[in-house]
Each structure stands twice: as structure tokens, then as C-alpha cells.
Length: 87
Image (cartoon, rainbow, N blue to C red; front, side):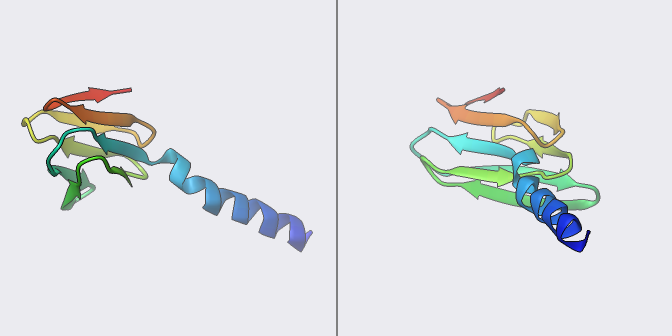
């Protein structure tokens, strides 16, 4: 029984990043987004060509163009040509 519990726990822990939102920067310069999770606010820099995972359990994001979005944690976001698209 303990092996079963450990297997389930490991499955949950390793699957957690799958629920994170990800942002891909397809622009030629670094982009900075502001992420607010609960009462904690942080800036996330995404280098040109990089993809970053964030927002594991819901958050608000302010994009470089000033737009704000509420995320649940499973979205794929791309910045391309200065525009943001959320899938």
C-alpha cells in the first residue's frame, strides 16, 4: 500500500509543471512581464527565443504592452512582433 501512495505522490509532483502557464518570446529583444500570484508580485524576464514556465496555480499577468490577463495556469502564450497571443 505504501508503494502505491508513493507512486501517486510522485505522479502528482512530476505532473505539477504541466499545469503551469508558459510564455515564449519570439521577438529579438528581452521582454518583461509582471506576474501577480496572490499578494506576491514579481517581474519575469524572457530572453529572445526563450520559453519560461510560470503561474502554477492561477495569477494575473501584465504584459509589456500594458494588457492584463487572468490565467489559470495551463495557457501557452507567445510574444511575437510586440503582440501577445494566448492559446
